[in-house]
Every structure is written in structure tokens, then in C-alpha cells.
Amino acid sequence: MTDPDDKTSNPRIATGARTINDLIETRLSRRAFLGGVTATTVTLAIGGCATDDAATQAAPAAIDFDFEEISRALDGTHHVPKGYSADLVIRWGDALFEDSPPFDPKRQTESAQLRQFGYNNDYLGFVTLPDDEDGQARGLLCVNHEYTSTALMFPGVVATYPDSMTADLCLAEMAAHGGSVVEVVQTNTGWKPVIGSEYNRRITPHRTPMEIRGPAAGSPRMVTSDDPSGRLASGTMNNCAGGITPWGTWLMAEENFNYYFVGEPPEGHPETDNLKRYGVPTTLFAWGQHFDRFKLAEEPNEPNRFGWVVEVDPMNPDSTPKKRTALGRFKHEGAESVIAPDGRLVIYMGDDQRFDYVYKFVSADRVDTDNPARNIDLLDNGTLYVARFDEDGSVAWLPVRHGHGPLTAENGFESQADVLIETRRAADLLGATPMDRPEDVEPDSRTGSVWVMLTNNHLRTTDQVDAANPRAHNAFGHIIQIVEPNGDFTSTESRWDIMVRCGDPSDPAVDADWNPSTSENGWFGSPDNCAIDPSGRLWVSTDGNEETGAADGLWAMETTGERRGTGKAFFRAPAGAEVCGPKFTPNGETLFLAVQHPGDGAEATFENPTTRWPDFENGVPPRPSVIAIRRKS
Ligand code: FEO
Ligand code: CA
Ligand code: CA
Ligand code: CA
Figure 1 (cartoon, rainbow, N blue to C red):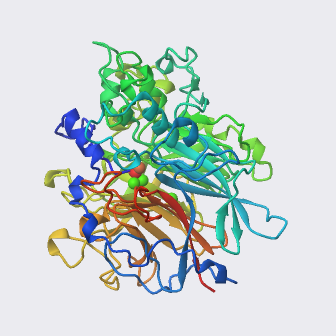
Figure 2: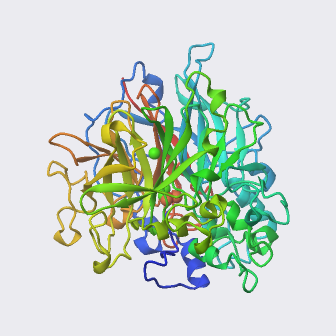
């Protein structure tokens, strides 16, 4: 999610402030700063999702780099290269269960939404299942529903927002957050959801009890009126990117949890500074008008129960998800993992805020690859590290551990629970490097490389640049490669380099840096999510490329050899949308993409979106959707 509060809460960095009214206005017009796209500029170049070609796919080859690059442009629909198809898999409001009611956008309810696919699909995990009895490939899609675009989702709410958001509408909105597990099967007309699959599940912020695990579980700072134990949360929200562990569980990263709280904590409350460091409150949702849990005056500890990574077993829809506090508390973007040579698990994570940090977690125990059940609580013990990117090209990974350096009682840390609940302040004191908004961080087990997407940071001033964040007013972001020595992902000393500085290479003022073989279509701005395909190539999706005058999309990138740093445009999103979740099936033949917040724009509403993708029907709002891209045979 783009960070519409547009600020830093890092006390090491000077900052400005905005009013709540500014923020609500921004919230309802997420793309205000982009200039937007008007409905009259939208042309439906290829007319809806390309489902017509799927039936002809016989033996598709793996997606590779030899595609014919698509052009830079912005219109109301999506585009793939010649010879590829993009099939619609599932949309917001589609049925997950036999008893799911039909999608009725003008009469949305909590009860309907709890049985339907949620809003604003972000992370996509894919867990392979055995082929079905007809020999068709199957899998579970694990989908984060990061947030809701309220103005686009509900009719008639803008003029009197937030008063227009009744308790019932807020409940419908909560039910559209969280996540979905949905079984998908590859039929001869493309990937389809299996409605009523025994695995299908909805996870939400308010109806999915979750265990709080690890060192912060049971801390008095985790206790609320609803949960005197400090060990049981009632759900998860603002789940951005994520990961699938080697044992097949799904990690949901809680990102901008500060948007859901209202008011101020009681005068002199001990959490006051902690709340401030996480930007709480930055009220963008109306839930706090109706539900005490989101009122800081009544529940000042409730925000401490968010900002974690949640582990879910998608194979068991009755399982209780677990918040893994050992992985730290921040605006978690993703949680991609790799098994280190010594068998321990390493998870890479970004804290997506201007001037916040890059982290990795190293498990204490080894992954048992023969017996997945033995890994059930592996993520409760280990060491969290935060990165310092030094000028000489080295990375020092600093342990975020109670008793280490300044992380002592003298500085208010009585325990590891305190250190983790205040991960950001601990990292400040350790001297981590403030980065240009760390988004997805992706390790590659084959090369020992780790790719860090730094999306942008226009607030960095000329006297705040450093080697790893070299541009002031960094409007377009950059991509850093970390190299772990000899592929040892547990190392505390690594190397780093910048692969590309994003933005238009033809404009000297931008100071972009791409491989010269990059075409006029191959450069982009604001990298967000990424994936590594089965042949090791990096694919990068964007959130904010519309600022360059063209749609967000997905680009393939060369990372080695003479063409290192070459981008090549593969997918273009419809107007207003960003692209999330790039996920290849293990054979590389299908690329799943999440098209998030289509139709958004400066003045976009339910009644007047910038596109009605993917249905293109009057009266039907745009619908965030998962698509499957394949090569035609
Ligand atoms: Fe949810 Fe950092 O994007
Ligand atoms: Ca995003
Ligand atoms: Ca993101
Ligand atoms: Ca990723």
C-alpha cells in the first residue's frame, strides 16, 4: 500500500505534520498526488480479461525473457505481450463457498463478505496440491486482502465521509480485509476457483481468533479489556506482502495498522511515545467511530497487538493463526524466507515507512524438511537483526536482542518483549540505516543474493543522502542487491550494491541509472513487490509508476552479466491499479498477479471510477482481482 500519510515517524529524521482532515481527504483520493486519470482518457484497448484464448492452450512453455516487450501507456485495461494470455481467476465478491451469496455491490453486508473473496488482493502464495482425478493441476492460493478502497467499494459514501460509514458498513469493510485461502484448479479454460473446497477460508480483522506467540506473548503491554491474557488477538489487518515457509505455512505481514485507530491515549499513558513512533493514530478508517477496540482512549494497548507477522496453516481451515512476535513489530511489508546452508530459516523483511529499516530473522533451530510438523513453532525462537548499510559496501546485521548494546533497562527495555514491541526504537538506538521505504525483500537460495525494493522517499533531503540511499527527493526508488557471503544467509556481515536507480533515464534531473540496453518501455518507478522465477530471473511490480505518466505493471529484470540492470515491460495494469503478489507456479508456466485498487484516482468513486475493470458493466464498480498469465502454446 502506498503510504498516504506521507511522513516519517523516525525521531532521527526531521519531519512535518499533517492534520487528520488532510489524511481523510488523502485516504479517499489515494492517488491525489499522482494527478489521476480521468474517465474520458480511458480506452478499452483489449476489452476485458483475455479469457477467450485459454481454451487453446495445449502445452504452454515456461514464461521466459524472450517476450515481445509491451509499451508504456495508461488505459482502462490490462496488457500482456503478444503470445500470452491473462485469465481472470477470482474477483472481489466472488463466491468461496456453496452458500456464498451473489455479489451485490449496492447491498454489501458483513455476512455476505465473510463468504466471498475479499478486497484489494496483495500477497499471493501458492501451495501445490496433488493433481485431481482428471490429472488437472491444483493448488491453494493464499491471498492477503490488504485494505479497502472505501470510496470505490461503497456507493454514496464520499460526500459525508466518515459519518456515512455506519457500524454495518464498517463491519462489511472489516470482512473485506484479512485474507483468503482458495483452492484453484487448472482446467482447459484456465485456472478456476474450486467453490466449496474443503480448504477455502476467510481470515479477517475481527472474526478470526489468533494466538499471540513468542517473546511478547503475555506481556502486560499486550493486555486489553477483551484479552486479559495478552495472548489472544481477534484478527489481523492491513496484510501487505508475505511469504510461504518451506513447510507450507503462509506468512501474512501486518503493515499500516496505524490507519485504524482514533483519538489519543489517556494523558501520560506509558505507551504514548511508542504509539507515536508507529504513527498511531493516523486515522484513515472509520471503524473507531463504532468499535471501542480502535479507540486509543479506551484501549491504548490494542495497537501493540498489530504490526506482527501472522503464520497460517492453509491446509487446515480450522487452525488458529499465530502472531509470531519474535519477528519484530513494525510496518511489515513481506516475509520471504530461505533455508541457510546450516539448515536454519532466514526471513527477510522490510519496514515500509520513509526512513525505516531492513530486517532479517534467523531461527534458532534447523528446519526439519522431512517432517514439516516439527517446524510448527520454529518461528518462536531466533534472532532478529536490523541492517546498517555502510559506505564501503558492507552490511552489518545488528542483533535486536535484549541486553545487547543500548537495549537495556536504562533505555526502558526490561525484556525481549519490550524490545520487540518497540522494534523501531530499538533499531533507532542500534544505529540502523534509515532507508527509502523498504518494500519487498526477496532472497534467492541459488545465488545467495537478496533483492531489496526501495520504493521512493521524496522527503529525503540533500544532507540526508548516504551511499545506500543516494538521491535526495527520491521520487522513483531503487533496488539494492545484498550478497550473503558464500550463500550463508545467517551471516552478520554481507555486501551490498545498488542494481538500478529507478525513473526515466532520459531525464538528467531524475539521475536514474539503468543498463543502457533498457528500452523506453523497460524503465519504471516505485518498485514494490518482486518474485524470482524458476530460472532465477527477477520480476518487479510497481506501485506508483503512474507518477511517470504510465500504468503500474510488472517488469522482468536481468540481474547478471552484461545486461545486468536491464528492465523489460511484461504487464500493464488497468488505470488506478498497482500490481502485487507476483507468484510463479513451481514449473514456471503460470504467473499469478494480484491487480489491486483498479479504478482508483484523484476523484475516483464507486459512481465514477477511472475504469470498471474487469467487468466493464455500468453500475458495477472496479473489482480487485487475481489473474493468471500463461504463454500460449
Ligand atoms: Fe502495502 Fe508497502 O505496500
Ligand atoms: Ca503497494
Ligand atoms: Ca507492498
Ligand atoms: Ca515477493
